[in-house]
Image (cartoon, rainbow, N blue to C red; front, top):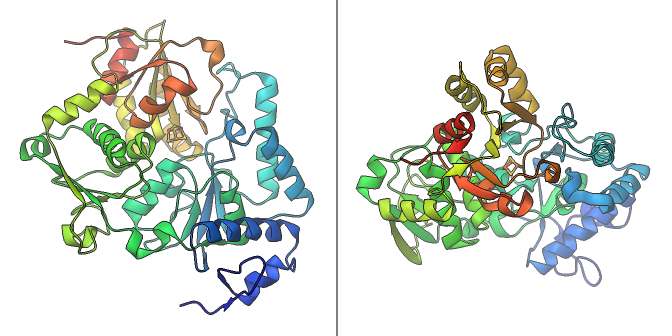
Length: 427
Ligand code: F3S
């Protein structure tokens, strides 16, 4: 229930704003908040929001120099000079460098310096320097029903779907406006009526009974490509781990614009099909069997073989369970001298994995940790990579454009095998 008042004329004329919000617009809290709320009200009016909603936290994608660019540095510098501070817990997405190892990744010095500059500006605004696309595992863990102001498509789809928090896919800078004001306009996925499943994906019993780990990103890729920004509902899966849900969501958010999915019996707003669809009949029903999964994997380049320049795993950023798995697969092995194996993760998982001995095994095998960034965010032109192998649906979708490589999708085991052999071998 809104306790504000309808503004008559001027900014916010179509939205209810509280006295406090009106005060912010009048400049009572300084220029950064005034400007940020003004942007959010404009967005809200354009999207039919009736009011603002307070958020529990924010997550920023324009922490990366690749995304923020020089314009970002200029905007952040101005905001800092005006005393801007975030009003809610706010975390940073991966940056465009590994802060500790950028030289190893052949990042130009000047480029690294610009990312360091952004980091310093975000520090001054009170942003927690998590540099990860999986902030929901550590410092920014939403609760069911929390309203949020997040960007980063893979994180947005995870917190909406797996946790049951509520956020739209915010654009770069709009996320910062949310952080500075502690509010977002209330439309889209903040409203229950927009969270109902719209398109049903029904797995055939034989596929469900033999659902391999790498089918999660493949199914996510297929679902995203099919539904665009609609809300898909998946029925038939007997279960899914945290990392499988993460991989599914990231792929669906990349090949489509999925920001929320339901898996019946698995995700919290889908204890039944009826609950997932809010009592409505889905607009479409799509049956997915072995043939459809094989077809989408072929589209993701899974049928290719031959030499490999770089193998990318840990997208979204690897969890400690994934690090354990990588270490087990690499123990006593050696990455091929013509191939790079890069493991993307965040600094918290890195530290834990180091304590647990996984980092030593991974590095002894010749693989590199890529911490606080990833293949998609770093400038990798100096490497001249032509072919990348990955177990990530999101990398499979983006790296042909961002890194300019041909992409081969494979299971985690096959990725590591390709790194050791220096090539993909198909039986
Ligand atoms: Fe994260 Fe980079 Fe993948 S930001 S989701 S590791 S493309």
